[in-house]
Length: 490
Image (tube, rainbow, N blue to C red; front, top):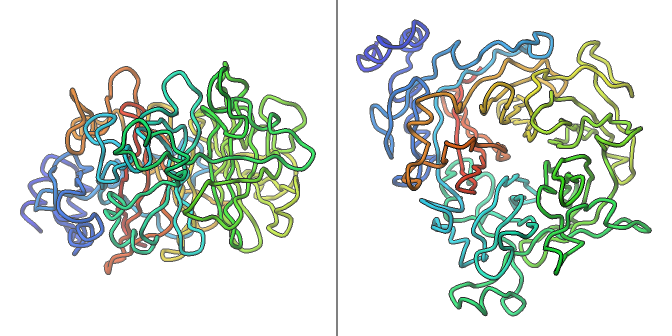
């Protein structure tokens, strides 16, 4: 047994000792340290974090990353029917780390290597939902704040769209590339306000713009347009009217969007589906609204108000929808729709986890914990598993992962990756006067993380362990952080 690992386990648990006995040492599993180092990027781009409560520092050293204590990481869900283990063995968390901050560094307005204030006149945003369309990887962001002259405090904020200079495959191998290779769609410099105020600004970011279905008004879908009372933009979804899930079909990008009650009431009440035909990294992201999906506060919705925030994934001939209703207070339910009928409204089937059947009645949720809002779900063919990732607000803020062999489940018990109640997390990630190094969040005053979204590819190591990367939002500073978690293989 590795002496360093044995010393760590002396103040940890028997589970840790068992991990050491099967070859897990202080660097991770087998050659895991080398695998994480390569994927995290160069130099100090990644900040390894020990989930066992010890180890910290830029780069990877003997005490940088330690195995997750089995049993403590994955507490048993209260609803056994909704979260029983699937046919395959459930992965365990080995390590997690921050790769980098994508927008702001020490403070809001302090740019990272992505230089968003000058390259896109953007100083703050959230979400960053990844979507691979063809060979391009896009990121759909939420409420986006301008740097100079555009989208200032007091206005309703539009939604920026970014893209990676690198492919999804390249980022899976080396996610640290995104720390300097994230770009945003922008207006032309001549059409931008920023460069007229500050010559160092190249252009203004271009917000996602909607067009209504034939014969309909955009006001049916956009209740809080961007801008203010003096200058409103009815075709730009505003504050809290944000993307919640994405999928690609053919050469097009599809985005689920939320609708709030009104400019004075940001309650997310409804959802709709929009299509961005043949997306490009140039020009304005113009989306066509296809149809309404769900309405939580209305009456007669066939989805019963359970699909206001929607994570989506295609598989076979179906589009699967993983939905939540009441924001950050909901269980997760499952619906599906034949891809052949994607252009038409309706046609959804609902899954009942209690009976294991599909129908049109409201069924039992696939994940019963009532603490979800934004979620992310992806099928990773490299590990032949479905993965669910989300911030869980049921008891307190946690980022949790679950696994299943099929979208219907059964889904595993939650595996906690980050926990706002964990003193190790707060000591590593909570900011002081500014957010230095890996510090990313002012943890006082109810500030928390939210919006965890999986990148589309997974890196599998030679020992069978695998690493996923995901975006994670922070409220203060208003930022998006790139995170990474490594799990044991089957």
